[in-house]
Amino acid sequence: MKKKFSLAVCLLFAVLRPVWPQFGGQETVQPRIVARVAPASGTVDFRFQVPAGYHITDLKNNFFAITLEKNDFAAIVKTIFPAGVPFGDESVFKGEFSVRVLLKNLKPIKNSLKLDFDVSFQICQEYPQELCYAPDQSRVQVGIGPDFSPAGTATATAASAPTAAAPAAAHKNKPLPRRLEDLIRGQFNRASLLLFILVFAAGFLASLTPCVYPVIPIIMGYVGGRSGGRKLKGFTLSLFFVLGLALVYSLLGVVAAKTGSLIGISFQNPIVVTAIAAIFIIMGLSLAGLFSIPVPAWISSKVSGSHKSDIAGALIVGGIAAVIAAPCVGPVLIALLSWISQSGNVFLGFWLTFVFSLGMSVIFLVAGTFSGAIAALPRGGKWMSTVKYFFSALLIAGGIFFLANILKPWLTLLLWGTYLIALAVAFGLFRPQAEGGVAQVLARTAVVLFFLCGAVLFYQGLSQRFFPTAVTGAAQAKEALPWLDDLSQAKQRARLEKKRLLIDAWAEWCAACRELDEKTFSRDDVRAALADTILVKLDFTRKSEKNDLLKKELGIIGMPTVIVLDSRGVEMGRFSGFIGPEDFLDLFRGF
Image (cartoon, rainbow, N blue to C red; front, top):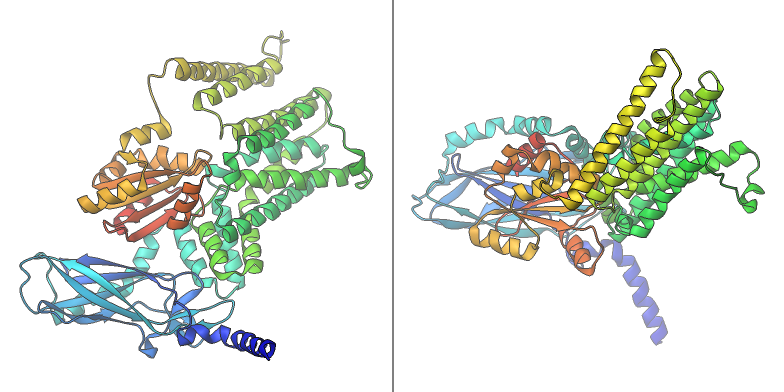
């Protein structure tokens, strides 16, 4: 009897589980709500951020409203909602949007006071199955002072006039990646062809950042050295290189989204970095003819023909290159990974990430095909040897670029200096040159320039190690701004001093983080804008329990992530990836 009763309870739970949230059986999902006061116009803007995969229901349901608790000083004149997003036969609210509330004066405000607003709404889940939670309500407290000028009805009508154009203007002023992010967020629930096209375009834009540049010499070196002077083979190897990169990159993205692990976290492990760098350096030295790498018998017996072996190698090298490209994050990729994490739709999430990586790989396909075309130029013994050495040098450079993630700056300079000097010697710096034409003179000049650049870098490395008199780049940005390194201390200061708090989550292996320091935070106008803000840098280079807790607390998926909080610790906005100083100032002032 007990077994039958237990079975009946389990069956009842299984039947009711999909609709349980509608009856209050589960804590509802909450949108993030931040209120901003505009004293001059007598308005309060409520900025909403609804989690991906959810929306607030249509106004016609009368669940979405903002009311002000009765007081002696102000009352609501009008509430202005933005245009909704079509969802079925409704017009719903999703992603980030603002609702403007216009107030009127009931009594002069002589001292600062708090107004209590009640925001009511109904949240609905869009996938994996559509269901709506019970209507809910949040209380938002807004502080106003004597400078607050509540508007009358006429003023309210005038103030509401530009609101229809305001979202469009704000959208137009956003950087292109942010505009793409907004469009993609609006398409998540549809899985349409447009969504995949937008994700592909976002991936292509990501390929134009310095973060992915180390992959270019790797594909050029591998394809150029293996194409055998055939253009079609160069294109084919490039395709399989891109396929290997896209598959591994997509898997890394899905795993990162499902586990909450930081993308590129393996870059903290010097053993992993050294091993991958060694692979490319050894491949380069082998291509230069210093030694040969024998193919194991168990591989050669299963993969017949050099063409198939080269294709398998292109897939593997592309997969390894994906690890290099993995830390390259931006707003669109963060949105993708957040959506995978929240929706649980791993299948669609994988293919969206795959399409994103294909868009990011267009530049690699062009570079690989171009290198294959170079190798297919008219043959000649000395010419072909030069081409082979060129691709060999590219592979070695890729390995050194990768090693720079774990080496100290002075040691990196020494390594690059040694490499360029060795390259100049290998290309005949000290060999007597016969009389030749313009090409011979240009080649000789290039070799001398390699040597001189190498000598300068070698000298700079020694100077930084033994005579550290100046700092540049990221170190300069850190010195120029008063960065803290303790989040709790920074929050306490922001609360006591009633200032905003800017959090910069970074890592040593993150190229975009260094670019953000060197090109954005080092600018005078950016430093001036941040003068009245508490700043904290959180270093996620090494894996630790503290960093894992911080990552979960702040909802950080990739590097860099910049978060702005108000003095109470409420998030005002965030962005991920590199943005230039002008775009940063626009975003920061808009928070």
